[in-house]
Length: 440
Image (cartoon, rainbow, N blue to C red):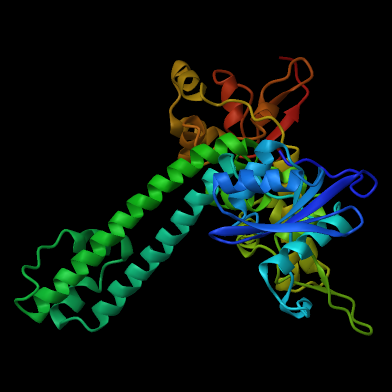
């Protein structure tokens, strides 16, 4: 865990800066008054990290180490310093315009040390790279590349069918994507060297089978991501509007230590959802933020497009006030970012749902019967029973005698008399259920 900085200048300590590269790291040390004490290049290995730390400690007590690129070349060093309990912060690489005195590894290392000495509290905390969030990040990268490859494959198939021989073009033109892939993959066109038709059929079959392989790979990755996300952020994945991929994306953006973010406003800025003033004269407005993490912004955008009644109500109010579609999306993303930050930093407990199927069987109820009572799709009930979609507010829909009990709208108390536990399966307590002050 990253240690906070306290009284770097007042104590007789030293600060250091590290310019990171793929094969070597260059470290520079400054005194508390800014005097240069020394610098050294070390290999980017475990032995090199240990040598770097011993070199810095030879000058005195470490107050802070500023490390460039803790999310790339400096990731290994950041994990090493965190394990050793050494206080460090991430240093932003200087822009080209700021390098008026030239550029070299020692110059960059001393510049990083100068930042650590001048503004220790304002430097960002580095993400923790040794937790489940790091597992989610690497799996998400692989899935993203697989999805792009699958999109490229279906485009190649569609493009090839445009110029394919007439018989093949007419044969496959009536199929949609799922049936097209399955049917083409099952063909036996013969040797690709026999004719144009055989070569085209063989190429199409190879592309279709590649599509199937990528689809199976994506499904496996999503299953792994679902397990990791449910373990890491159960409250977020259980909230309406947050899917496996959107939750995983926001987790990667926030990191395993989201408390490093000072406020929900800083998280919104990190996601590119903070409002940017765009006023002039008599016009007072804000515009979209085109900065920040665009993958996190995409996740907020997907949530804003969900069929959440709260989203629809807020959108209606914004449109009534005269806001455009872009302004409505901007406001929605900002509100969702506020909710996402709370779910990451201060999540509510999520009750277990693993016993729902057994209890339903004991009551003799089918999925269709429960879905009809709760006015949801049967697939939703099945997902809840299998734990693929836990419900964050499930505990709020359990009976609370003698104060009151929850009954789905449109259903009487007698409809649920045999399945009291099924009240946990509704989609959202404020939308599906109402509280009746009736005796148990």
